Amino acid sequence: MSTGFFKVPRPINEPVKLYLPGSSERKEVLNTYKKMIQKKIEIPMYINGKDVKSDKTTTVSPPHDHKNIVAKYYLANESHVNQAISTALDAKENWENMSWENRAGIFLRAAELIAGPYRSKINAATMIGQSKTIHQAEIDAACELIDFLRFNVQYITDIYSNQPDSDPDAWNRVEYRPLEGFVYAVTPFNFTAIAGNLAASMAMLGNVVVWKPSDSQVYSAKILIDVYKEAGLPDGVINVVFGDPEMISNKVLESRDFAGLHFTGSTVVFNSFWKKIGANISNYKTYPKIVGETGGKDFILAHKSANPKEVSTAITRGAFEFQGQKCSAASRGYISKSIWNSVKANLIEDLKSINMGSPDDLSNFMTAVIHENSFDKIAKYIDNAKADSKVQVIAGGSYNKSKGYFIEPTVLVVKDPNYVTMREEIFGPVITIYVYDDNDFDKTLDLIDSSTKYALTGAVLSKDRNVIEKVTKALRNAAGNFYVNDKPTGAVVGKQPFGGARASGTNDKAGSMLNLLRWVSPRLIKETFVTPTDYRYPFLDKD
Image (tube, rainbow, N blue to C red; front, side, top):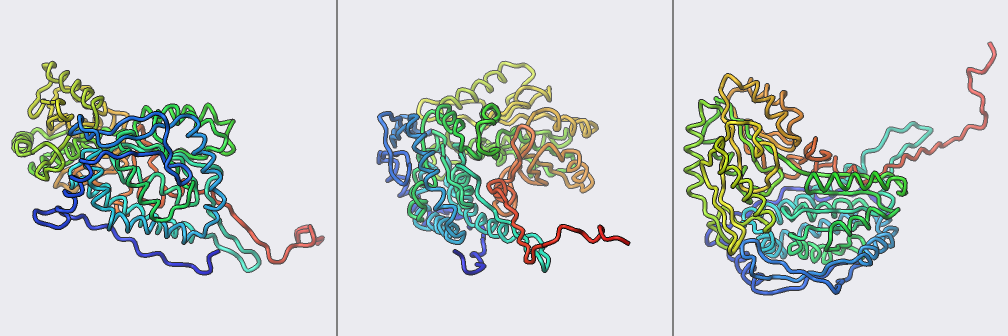
Protein backbone atom coordinates (compact mmCIF):
# COMPACT_ATOMS: atom_id res chain seq x y z
CA MET A 1 0.00 0.00 0.00
CA SER A 2 1.22 3.48 -0.88
CA THR A 3 2.32 5.66 2.05
CA GLY A 4 2.79 8.88 0.18
CA PHE A 5 1.56 10.99 -2.73
CA PHE A 6 4.46 10.45 -5.04
CA LYS A 7 5.65 12.74 -7.81
CA VAL A 8 6.67 10.84 -10.91
CA PRO A 9 9.65 11.93 -13.02
CA ARG A 10 8.64 14.89 -15.17
CA PRO A 11 8.03 13.53 -18.68
CA ILE A 12 10.01 15.00 -21.53
CA ASN A 13 9.86 14.10 -25.19
CA GLU A 14 12.76 11.87 -26.13
CA PRO A 15 15.17 13.80 -28.43
CA VAL A 16 15.30 12.38 -31.94
CA LYS A 17 18.81 11.26 -32.87
CA LEU A 18 19.93 12.49 -36.29
CA TYR A 19 22.15 9.56 -37.36
CA LEU A 20 24.52 11.88 -39.16
CA PRO A 21 27.45 10.43 -41.13
CA GLY A 22 30.24 9.45 -38.73
CA SER A 23 28.00 9.55 -35.64
CA SER A 24 28.17 6.80 -33.03
CA GLU A 25 24.43 6.10 -33.23
CA ARG A 26 24.69 5.65 -37.01
CA LYS A 27 27.47 3.09 -36.66
CA GLU A 28 25.66 1.28 -33.85
CA VAL A 29 22.31 0.89 -35.62
CA LEU A 30 23.94 -0.24 -38.88
CA ASN A 31 26.04 -2.82 -37.03
CA THR A 32 22.96 -4.04 -35.17
CA TYR A 33 20.98 -4.19 -38.42
CA LYS A 34 23.73 -6.26 -40.07
CA LYS A 35 23.91 -8.73 -37.20
CA MET A 36 20.14 -9.14 -36.93
CA ILE A 37 19.40 -9.58 -40.63
CA GLN A 38 22.06 -12.29 -40.93
CA LYS A 39 20.66 -14.33 -38.06
CA LYS A 40 17.44 -16.34 -38.26
CA ILE A 41 15.58 -16.33 -34.95
CA GLU A 42 12.55 -18.03 -33.44
CA ILE A 43 9.70 -15.94 -32.08
CA PRO A 44 7.44 -17.84 -29.70
CA MET A 45 4.19 -16.61 -28.26
CA TYR A 46 4.34 -15.17 -24.76
CA ILE A 47 1.78 -16.50 -22.28
CA ASN A 48 2.03 -16.37 -18.48
CA GLY A 49 5.58 -15.11 -18.66
CA LYS A 50 6.75 -18.10 -20.71
CA ASP A 51 7.77 -18.63 -24.31
CA VAL A 52 5.10 -20.80 -25.93
CA LYS A 53 5.55 -22.75 -29.14
CA SER A 54 3.07 -24.66 -31.28
CA ASP A 55 3.15 -27.19 -34.07
CA LYS A 56 2.41 -24.54 -36.69
CA THR A 57 4.81 -21.83 -37.82
CA THR A 58 5.33 -19.24 -40.52
CA THR A 59 8.19 -16.96 -41.46
CA VAL A 60 9.21 -13.31 -41.44
CA SER A 61 10.95 -11.69 -44.40
CA PRO A 62 11.96 -8.05 -44.87
CA PRO A 63 9.59 -6.28 -47.31
CA HIS A 64 12.62 -4.90 -49.14
CA ASP A 65 14.20 -8.35 -49.44
CA HIS A 66 11.32 -10.80 -49.38
CA LYS A 67 13.36 -13.89 -50.29
CA ASN A 68 15.44 -13.53 -47.14
CA ILE A 69 13.92 -15.27 -44.10
CA VAL A 70 14.95 -13.62 -40.82
CA ALA A 71 12.59 -15.33 -38.37
CA LYS A 72 10.18 -18.13 -37.73
CA TYR A 73 7.23 -17.51 -35.42
CA TYR A 74 4.65 -19.77 -33.84
CA LEU A 75 0.93 -19.60 -34.50
CA ALA A 76 -1.79 -19.98 -31.91
CA ASN A 77 -4.60 -22.49 -31.89
CA GLU A 78 -7.76 -22.11 -29.83
CA SER A 79 -6.16 -23.66 -26.75
CA HIS A 80 -3.43 -20.99 -26.75
CA VAL A 81 -6.02 -18.21 -26.88
CA ASN A 82 -7.97 -19.80 -24.03
CA GLN A 83 -4.73 -20.11 -22.08
CA ALA A 84 -3.90 -16.45 -22.68
CA ILE A 85 -7.33 -15.41 -21.40
CA SER A 86 -7.29 -17.64 -18.31
CA THR A 87 -3.73 -16.63 -17.49
CA ALA A 88 -4.62 -12.96 -17.71
CA LEU A 89 -7.59 -13.44 -15.40
CA ASP A 90 -5.45 -15.38 -12.93
CA ALA A 91 -2.94 -12.52 -12.84
CA LYS A 92 -5.58 -9.84 -12.45
CA GLU A 93 -5.98 -9.71 -8.67
CA ASN A 94 -2.30 -9.30 -7.86
CA TRP A 95 -1.72 -6.85 -10.69
CA GLU A 96 -4.64 -4.52 -10.00
CA ASN A 97 -3.80 -4.52 -6.28
CA MET A 98 -0.16 -3.61 -6.85
CA SER A 99 0.45 -0.04 -5.71
CA TRP A 100 0.21 2.36 -8.62
CA GLU A 101 3.75 3.66 -8.21
CA ASN A 102 5.16 0.17 -8.64
CA ARG A 103 3.12 -0.43 -11.78
CA ALA A 104 4.35 2.93 -13.04
CA GLY A 105 7.94 2.06 -12.18
CA ILE A 106 7.85 -0.96 -14.49
CA PHE A 107 6.92 1.11 -17.51
CA LEU A 108 9.24 3.99 -16.65
CA ARG A 109 12.03 1.42 -16.57
CA ALA A 110 10.82 0.08 -19.96
CA ALA A 111 11.08 3.61 -21.39
CA GLU A 112 14.68 3.96 -20.25
CA LEU A 113 15.59 0.51 -21.53
CA ILE A 114 14.35 1.55 -24.97
CA ALA A 115 16.16 4.90 -24.71
CA GLY A 116 19.39 3.10 -23.84
CA PRO A 117 20.41 -0.54 -24.38
CA TYR A 118 17.48 -1.53 -26.58
CA ARG A 119 17.43 1.53 -28.83
CA SER A 120 19.47 0.12 -31.70
CA LYS A 121 17.74 -3.28 -31.40
CA ILE A 122 14.20 -1.93 -31.63
CA ASN A 123 15.14 0.49 -34.42
CA ALA A 124 16.94 -2.19 -36.42
CA ALA A 125 14.05 -4.63 -35.92
CA THR A 126 11.63 -2.00 -37.23
CA MET A 127 13.91 -1.30 -40.20
CA ILE A 128 14.10 -5.01 -41.04
CA GLY A 129 10.57 -6.19 -40.33
CA GLN A 130 8.60 -3.10 -41.40
CA SER A 131 11.07 -1.62 -43.88
CA LYS A 132 11.38 1.76 -42.24
CA THR A 133 14.26 4.15 -42.82
CA ILE A 134 16.34 4.89 -39.74
CA HIS A 135 14.65 8.29 -39.44
CA GLN A 136 11.18 6.75 -39.47
CA ALA A 137 12.25 3.96 -37.10
CA GLU A 138 13.85 6.41 -34.68
CA ILE A 139 10.82 8.68 -34.37
CA ASP A 140 8.51 5.67 -34.10
CA ALA A 141 10.03 2.65 -32.40
CA ALA A 142 12.31 4.58 -30.09
CA CYS A 143 11.09 8.13 -29.45
CA GLU A 144 7.33 7.83 -29.72
CA LEU A 145 7.17 4.67 -27.64
CA ILE A 146 9.42 6.21 -24.99
CA ASP A 147 7.13 9.24 -24.97
CA PHE A 148 4.02 7.09 -24.62
CA LEU A 149 5.47 5.29 -21.61
CA ARG A 150 6.74 8.44 -19.87
CA PHE A 151 3.73 10.64 -20.49
CA ASN A 152 1.17 7.95 -19.73
CA VAL A 153 2.63 7.59 -16.24
CA GLN A 154 2.14 11.32 -15.71
CA TYR A 155 -1.39 11.18 -17.12
CA ILE A 156 -2.28 8.32 -14.78
CA THR A 157 -0.96 10.33 -11.85
CA ASP A 158 -3.14 13.25 -12.94
CA ILE A 159 -6.18 10.99 -13.29
CA TYR A 160 -5.76 9.49 -9.83
CA SER A 161 -5.35 12.94 -8.29
CA ASN A 162 -8.59 14.23 -9.86
CA GLN A 163 -10.93 14.01 -6.88
CA PRO A 164 -14.33 15.52 -6.01
CA ASP A 165 -14.95 18.15 -3.34
CA SER A 166 -15.97 17.08 0.16
CA ASP A 167 -17.77 18.67 3.10
CA PRO A 168 -16.65 18.63 6.74
CA ASP A 169 -19.20 15.91 7.56
CA ALA A 170 -18.61 13.69 4.52
CA TRP A 171 -15.58 12.60 2.52
CA ASN A 172 -16.01 11.99 -1.23
CA ARG A 173 -13.40 10.14 -3.18
CA VAL A 174 -13.13 8.46 -6.58
CA GLU A 175 -11.35 5.17 -7.08
CA TYR A 176 -10.20 4.60 -10.66
CA ARG A 177 -10.66 0.86 -10.92
CA PRO A 178 -9.33 -1.23 -13.80
CA LEU A 179 -12.00 -2.81 -15.97
CA GLU A 180 -13.71 -5.94 -14.71
CA GLY A 181 -12.28 -8.76 -16.81
CA PHE A 182 -9.49 -8.65 -19.40
CA VAL A 183 -8.84 -6.33 -22.34
CA TYR A 184 -7.84 -7.08 -25.91
CA ALA A 185 -5.18 -5.16 -27.86
CA VAL A 186 -5.11 -5.50 -31.66
CA THR A 187 -2.22 -3.61 -33.18
CA PRO A 188 -1.06 -2.65 -36.71
CA PHE A 189 2.14 -3.22 -38.64
CA ASN A 190 3.06 0.36 -39.35
CA PHE A 191 4.03 1.73 -35.93
CA THR A 192 6.03 -0.19 -33.38
CA ALA A 193 5.11 2.52 -30.87
CA ILE A 194 1.39 1.94 -31.37
CA ALA A 195 1.90 -1.80 -30.92
CA GLY A 196 3.79 -1.21 -27.71
CA ASN A 197 1.43 1.42 -26.36
CA LEU A 198 -1.96 -0.15 -26.96
CA ALA A 199 -1.21 -3.01 -24.60
CA ALA A 200 0.97 -1.08 -22.13
CA SER A 201 -1.40 1.87 -21.65
CA MET A 202 -4.17 -0.44 -20.48
CA ALA A 203 -1.84 -2.50 -18.31
CA MET A 204 -0.53 0.60 -16.52
CA LEU A 205 -3.99 1.17 -15.08
CA GLY A 206 -4.15 -2.31 -13.59
CA ASN A 207 -5.76 -4.12 -16.51
CA VAL A 208 -4.62 -7.50 -17.82
CA VAL A 209 -4.18 -7.91 -21.56
CA VAL A 210 -4.37 -10.34 -24.44
CA TRP A 211 -2.35 -8.81 -27.29
CA LYS A 212 -2.59 -9.78 -30.98
CA PRO A 213 0.11 -7.97 -33.00
CA SER A 214 -0.05 -7.72 -36.79
CA ASP A 215 1.63 -10.61 -38.58
CA SER A 216 3.77 -7.97 -40.30
CA GLN A 217 5.04 -6.55 -37.01
CA VAL A 218 5.98 -9.75 -35.19
CA TYR A 219 9.72 -9.12 -35.58
CA SER A 220 9.75 -5.86 -33.59
CA ALA A 221 7.02 -7.17 -31.25
CA LYS A 222 9.62 -9.69 -30.04
CA ILE A 223 11.83 -6.81 -28.89
CA LEU A 224 8.88 -5.21 -27.07
CA ILE A 225 8.23 -8.47 -25.22
CA ASP A 226 11.90 -8.64 -24.23
CA VAL A 227 11.78 -5.05 -22.94
CA TYR A 228 8.67 -5.56 -20.83
CA LYS A 229 10.12 -8.78 -19.39
CA GLU A 230 13.36 -7.06 -18.44
CA ALA A 231 11.45 -4.12 -16.99
CA GLY A 232 9.85 -6.51 -14.51
CA LEU A 233 6.33 -6.93 -15.86
CA PRO A 234 4.72 -9.76 -13.84
CA ASP A 235 3.75 -12.98 -15.57
CA GLY A 236 0.31 -13.01 -17.12
CA VAL A 237 -0.26 -9.25 -17.27
CA ILE A 238 0.37 -8.99 -21.04
CA ASN A 239 -0.03 -12.19 -23.04
CA VAL A 240 0.93 -12.27 -26.72
CA VAL A 241 -0.57 -14.57 -29.35
CA PHE A 242 0.16 -14.73 -33.08
CA GLY A 243 -1.83 -16.23 -35.90
CA ASP A 244 -5.26 -16.30 -37.50
CA PRO A 245 -6.82 -12.96 -36.54
CA GLU A 246 -10.39 -14.12 -37.02
CA MET A 247 -9.98 -17.24 -34.90
CA ILE A 248 -8.15 -15.38 -32.13
CA SER A 249 -10.61 -12.50 -32.09
CA ASN A 250 -13.65 -14.77 -32.12
CA LYS A 251 -12.34 -16.69 -29.08
CA VAL A 252 -11.61 -13.45 -27.25
CA LEU A 253 -14.98 -11.90 -28.02
CA GLU A 254 -16.81 -15.04 -26.96
CA SER A 255 -15.47 -14.75 -23.44
CA ARG A 256 -17.83 -13.55 -20.72
CA ASP A 257 -14.88 -11.71 -19.19
CA PHE A 258 -14.07 -9.61 -22.26
CA ALA A 259 -14.04 -6.00 -21.01
CA GLY A 260 -12.50 -3.83 -23.70
CA LEU A 261 -10.94 -3.53 -27.16
CA HIS A 262 -8.00 -1.26 -27.96
CA PHE A 263 -7.63 -1.33 -31.73
CA THR A 264 -5.64 0.30 -34.50
CA GLY A 265 -6.17 -0.95 -38.05
CA SER A 266 -8.61 -0.83 -40.93
CA THR A 267 -12.13 0.56 -40.74
CA VAL A 268 -13.55 -2.67 -42.18
CA VAL A 269 -11.98 -4.81 -39.46
CA PHE A 270 -13.01 -2.41 -36.70
CA ASN A 271 -16.59 -2.45 -37.95
CA SER A 272 -16.57 -6.25 -37.83
CA PHE A 273 -15.37 -6.13 -34.22
CA TRP A 274 -18.16 -3.75 -33.28
CA LYS A 275 -20.76 -6.03 -34.87
CA LYS A 276 -19.44 -9.11 -33.08
CA ILE A 277 -19.34 -7.31 -29.75
CA GLY A 278 -22.91 -6.16 -30.31
CA ALA A 279 -24.04 -9.67 -31.13
CA ASN A 280 -22.44 -10.97 -27.93
CA ILE A 281 -23.46 -8.08 -25.69
CA SER A 282 -25.86 -10.07 -23.49
CA ASN A 283 -23.08 -12.54 -22.73
CA TYR A 284 -20.65 -10.07 -21.18
CA LYS A 285 -20.26 -9.38 -17.49
CA THR A 286 -20.02 -5.67 -18.23
CA TYR A 287 -20.40 -3.37 -21.24
CA PRO A 288 -17.02 -3.46 -23.03
CA LYS A 289 -15.06 -0.31 -23.77
CA ILE A 290 -14.43 -0.02 -27.53
CA VAL A 291 -11.63 2.24 -28.72
CA GLY A 292 -10.46 2.30 -32.32
CA GLU A 293 -8.20 4.36 -34.56
CA THR A 294 -8.92 3.27 -38.11
CA GLY A 295 -8.58 4.53 -41.69
CA GLY A 296 -7.93 7.91 -43.20
CA LYS A 297 -8.11 9.84 -46.44
CA ASP A 298 -6.09 12.78 -45.36
CA PHE A 299 -5.98 16.06 -47.23
CA ILE A 300 -3.77 19.01 -47.98
CA LEU A 301 -5.55 22.22 -48.96
CA ALA A 302 -3.38 24.92 -50.51
CA HIS A 303 -4.85 28.43 -50.81
CA LYS A 304 -3.63 30.83 -53.48
CA SER A 305 -1.76 32.74 -50.76
CA ALA A 306 0.35 29.71 -49.86
CA ASN A 307 4.08 29.49 -50.57
CA PRO A 308 4.43 26.93 -53.41
CA LYS A 309 7.67 25.48 -52.05
CA GLU A 310 6.08 24.97 -48.64
CA VAL A 311 3.15 23.21 -50.32
CA SER A 312 5.35 20.85 -52.36
CA THR A 313 7.44 20.00 -49.29
CA ALA A 314 4.30 19.25 -47.28
CA ILE A 315 3.12 16.94 -50.07
CA THR A 316 6.45 15.11 -50.40
CA ARG A 317 6.89 14.57 -46.69
CA GLY A 318 3.21 14.06 -45.93
CA ALA A 319 2.52 11.59 -48.73
CA PHE A 320 5.72 9.62 -49.19
CA GLU A 321 7.50 9.19 -45.85
CA PHE A 322 7.29 5.51 -44.89
CA GLN A 323 5.83 4.87 -48.36
CA GLY A 324 2.54 6.53 -47.40
CA GLN A 325 1.79 3.72 -44.94
CA LYS A 326 0.51 5.98 -42.21
CA CYS A 327 -3.15 6.46 -41.46
CA SER A 328 -2.28 10.17 -41.35
CA ALA A 329 -0.45 10.24 -44.69
CA ALA A 330 -1.54 12.87 -47.20
CA SER A 331 -3.38 11.09 -50.00
CA ARG A 332 -5.49 13.85 -51.56
CA GLY A 333 -4.52 17.41 -52.35
CA TYR A 334 -6.58 20.45 -53.33
CA ILE A 335 -4.29 23.04 -54.88
CA SER A 336 -5.20 26.54 -56.04
CA LYS A 337 -4.88 26.96 -59.80
CA SER A 338 -2.86 30.16 -59.47
CA ILE A 339 0.01 28.41 -57.63
CA TRP A 340 -0.29 24.92 -59.14
CA ASN A 341 2.36 25.28 -61.85
CA SER A 342 4.96 26.33 -59.27
CA VAL A 343 3.89 23.60 -56.84
CA LYS A 344 4.01 21.03 -59.64
CA ALA A 345 7.50 22.06 -60.77
CA ASN A 346 8.86 21.96 -57.21
CA LEU A 347 7.19 18.63 -56.52
CA ILE A 348 8.53 16.93 -59.64
CA GLU A 349 12.00 18.28 -58.92
CA ASP A 350 11.88 16.97 -55.34
CA LEU A 351 10.70 13.53 -56.40
CA LYS A 352 13.51 13.21 -58.94
CA SER A 353 16.00 13.43 -56.07
CA ILE A 354 14.36 10.76 -53.90
CA ASN A 355 16.29 7.53 -53.48
CA MET A 356 14.46 4.27 -52.81
CA GLY A 357 15.89 0.97 -51.65
CA SER A 358 16.96 -0.99 -48.58
CA PRO A 359 16.78 0.85 -45.22
CA ASP A 360 20.40 -0.05 -44.40
CA ASP A 361 21.40 2.45 -47.09
CA LEU A 362 20.76 5.64 -45.15
CA SER A 363 20.67 7.73 -48.31
CA ASN A 364 17.26 6.23 -49.12
CA PHE A 365 14.20 8.35 -48.37
CA MET A 366 11.80 5.48 -49.17
CA THR A 367 11.87 1.72 -48.94
CA ALA A 368 9.32 -1.03 -49.70
CA VAL A 369 5.63 -1.40 -48.90
CA ILE A 370 4.80 -3.97 -46.27
CA HIS A 371 3.81 -7.10 -48.24
CA GLU A 372 2.68 -8.47 -51.58
CA ASN A 373 -1.04 -7.98 -50.99
CA SER A 374 -0.45 -4.32 -50.28
CA PHE A 375 1.83 -4.02 -53.31
CA ASP A 376 -0.75 -5.59 -55.62
CA LYS A 377 -3.55 -3.38 -54.29
CA ILE A 378 -1.57 -0.18 -54.80
CA ALA A 379 -0.34 -1.27 -58.23
CA LYS A 380 -3.93 -1.84 -59.32
CA TYR A 381 -4.90 1.71 -58.36
CA ILE A 382 -1.94 3.00 -60.38
CA ASP A 383 -2.75 0.84 -63.42
CA ASN A 384 -6.37 1.96 -63.40
CA ALA A 385 -5.27 5.58 -63.24
CA LYS A 386 -2.89 5.11 -66.17
CA ALA A 387 -5.75 3.66 -68.22
CA ASP A 388 -8.11 6.56 -67.45
CA SER A 389 -7.94 9.46 -69.89
CA LYS A 390 -9.17 11.85 -67.19
CA VAL A 391 -6.17 11.12 -64.97
CA GLN A 392 -2.64 12.36 -65.51
CA VAL A 393 0.34 10.66 -63.89
CA ILE A 394 2.82 13.50 -63.43
CA ALA A 395 5.37 11.57 -61.33
CA GLY A 396 6.15 7.96 -60.55
CA GLY A 397 3.76 5.23 -61.61
CA SER A 398 6.32 2.42 -61.76
CA TYR A 399 6.68 -0.53 -59.41
CA ASN A 400 8.69 -3.73 -59.05
CA LYS A 401 8.47 -6.68 -56.67
CA SER A 402 11.22 -8.95 -57.95
CA LYS A 403 13.38 -8.42 -54.86
CA GLY A 404 11.30 -6.17 -52.62
CA TYR A 405 7.86 -4.55 -52.79
CA PHE A 406 8.96 -1.24 -54.25
CA ILE A 407 6.55 1.37 -55.59
CA GLU A 408 7.68 4.75 -56.83
CA PRO A 409 6.23 7.88 -55.22
CA THR A 410 3.30 8.55 -57.51
CA VAL A 411 1.37 11.77 -58.13
CA LEU A 412 -1.96 11.68 -59.96
CA VAL A 413 -3.80 14.77 -61.19
CA VAL A 414 -7.54 14.38 -61.75
CA LYS A 415 -10.25 16.44 -63.37
CA ASP A 416 -12.96 14.75 -61.31
CA PRO A 417 -12.67 15.61 -57.59
CA ASN A 418 -14.67 12.48 -56.80
CA TYR A 419 -12.37 10.12 -58.67
CA VAL A 420 -11.83 6.87 -56.77
CA THR A 421 -8.33 7.75 -55.52
CA MET A 422 -9.73 10.96 -54.03
CA ARG A 423 -12.16 8.94 -51.92
CA GLU A 424 -10.69 5.54 -51.04
CA GLU A 425 -7.81 4.82 -48.70
CA ILE A 426 -4.85 3.39 -50.64
CA PHE A 427 -2.25 3.16 -47.87
CA GLY A 428 0.71 3.54 -50.14
CA PRO A 429 2.93 6.16 -51.85
CA VAL A 430 0.19 7.66 -54.02
CA ILE A 431 -1.32 11.13 -53.76
CA THR A 432 -4.06 12.48 -56.00
CA ILE A 433 -4.24 16.20 -56.76
CA TYR A 434 -7.30 18.20 -57.75
CA VAL A 435 -6.54 21.68 -59.04
CA TYR A 436 -9.40 24.02 -58.16
CA ASP A 437 -10.25 27.39 -59.62
CA ASP A 438 -9.45 30.20 -57.21
CA ASN A 439 -13.06 31.37 -57.37
CA ASP A 440 -14.29 27.93 -56.25
CA PHE A 441 -12.62 27.98 -52.87
CA ASP A 442 -15.86 27.63 -50.89
CA LYS A 443 -17.02 24.77 -53.12
CA THR A 444 -13.68 23.10 -52.52
CA LEU A 445 -14.23 23.24 -48.77
CA ASP A 446 -17.52 21.41 -49.27
CA LEU A 447 -15.74 18.83 -51.45
CA ILE A 448 -13.13 18.14 -48.80
CA ASP A 449 -15.77 17.72 -46.13
CA SER A 450 -18.06 15.42 -48.11
CA SER A 451 -15.86 13.42 -50.51
CA THR A 452 -14.89 10.63 -48.11
CA LYS A 453 -16.22 8.82 -45.06
CA TYR A 454 -12.99 9.49 -43.14
CA ALA A 455 -12.05 12.32 -40.79
CA LEU A 456 -8.56 11.68 -39.45
CA THR A 457 -6.07 14.40 -40.45
CA GLY A 458 -5.92 17.38 -42.75
CA ALA A 459 -3.87 20.48 -43.41
CA VAL A 460 -4.33 23.97 -44.80
CA LEU A 461 -1.51 26.10 -46.14
CA SER A 462 -2.14 29.82 -46.43
CA LYS A 463 -0.60 33.16 -45.52
CA ASP A 464 -4.04 34.74 -45.08
CA ARG A 465 -5.21 34.54 -41.45
CA ASN A 466 -8.85 35.10 -42.44
CA VAL A 467 -8.62 32.10 -44.74
CA ILE A 468 -7.07 29.98 -42.01
CA GLU A 469 -9.89 30.89 -39.63
CA LYS A 470 -12.52 30.17 -42.28
CA VAL A 471 -11.07 26.77 -43.19
CA THR A 472 -10.57 25.77 -39.57
CA LYS A 473 -14.25 26.38 -38.86
CA ALA A 474 -15.61 24.96 -42.13
CA LEU A 475 -13.65 21.70 -41.76
CA ARG A 476 -14.05 21.27 -38.01
CA ASN A 477 -15.54 17.79 -38.46
CA ALA A 478 -13.37 16.72 -41.40
CA ALA A 479 -10.24 15.97 -39.36
CA GLY A 480 -9.55 15.01 -35.76
CA ASN A 481 -6.01 16.37 -36.14
CA PHE A 482 -5.83 19.58 -38.17
CA TYR A 483 -2.57 21.22 -39.22
CA VAL A 484 -2.01 24.84 -40.21
CA ASN A 485 0.90 25.47 -42.58
CA ASP A 486 2.31 21.99 -42.09
CA LYS A 487 1.97 18.45 -43.40
CA PRO A 488 -0.88 16.39 -41.89
CA THR A 489 1.41 13.85 -40.21
CA GLY A 490 3.77 13.67 -37.27
CA ALA A 491 1.71 13.90 -34.06
CA VAL A 492 3.94 14.08 -30.98
CA VAL A 493 2.90 12.53 -27.66
CA GLY A 494 2.09 15.17 -25.08
CA LYS A 495 1.77 17.85 -27.75
CA GLN A 496 -0.65 16.63 -30.44
CA PRO A 497 -3.05 13.97 -29.10
CA PHE A 498 -3.98 11.79 -32.06
CA GLY A 499 -7.27 10.43 -33.38
CA GLY A 500 -10.12 11.04 -35.79
CA ALA A 501 -13.87 10.62 -36.03
CA ARG A 502 -16.40 9.45 -38.63
CA ALA A 503 -14.97 6.29 -40.23
CA SER A 504 -11.52 7.11 -38.82
CA GLY A 505 -12.28 5.92 -35.32
CA THR A 506 -13.64 6.81 -31.91
CA ASN A 507 -11.33 9.84 -31.53
CA ASP A 508 -10.11 8.88 -28.07
CA LYS A 509 -6.80 10.66 -28.63
CA ALA A 510 -3.80 8.44 -28.09
CA GLY A 511 -1.00 10.28 -26.35
CA SER A 512 -3.31 12.03 -23.90
CA MET A 513 -5.26 11.52 -20.70
CA LEU A 514 -8.45 11.14 -22.76
CA ASN A 515 -7.44 7.70 -24.04
CA LEU A 516 -6.40 6.42 -20.62
CA LEU A 517 -9.74 7.40 -19.09
CA ARG A 518 -11.36 4.75 -21.28
CA TRP A 519 -9.51 1.99 -19.42
CA VAL A 520 -10.83 2.69 -15.95
CA SER A 521 -14.20 2.19 -14.31
CA PRO A 522 -14.51 4.90 -11.64
CA ARG A 523 -16.10 4.15 -8.30
CA LEU A 524 -17.40 6.96 -6.07
CA ILE A 525 -17.04 6.39 -2.35
CA LYS A 526 -18.91 8.69 0.05
CA GLU A 527 -18.09 8.34 3.71
CA THR A 528 -20.43 10.07 6.19
CA PHE A 529 -18.77 10.84 9.51
CA VAL A 530 -21.88 11.30 11.67
CA THR A 531 -24.69 9.08 10.44
CA PRO A 532 -28.29 10.37 10.91
CA THR A 533 -30.44 8.57 13.47
CA ASP A 534 -33.80 10.18 12.70
CA TYR A 535 -35.54 9.88 9.36
CA ARG A 536 -37.45 13.15 9.85
CA TYR A 537 -36.35 16.24 7.92
CA PRO A 538 -36.86 19.75 9.37
CA PHE A 539 -39.54 20.60 6.82
CA LEU A 540 -41.76 18.07 8.52
CA ASP A 541 -41.93 20.14 11.72
CA LYS A 542 -45.25 21.87 12.45
CA ASP A 543 -45.57 25.67 12.40
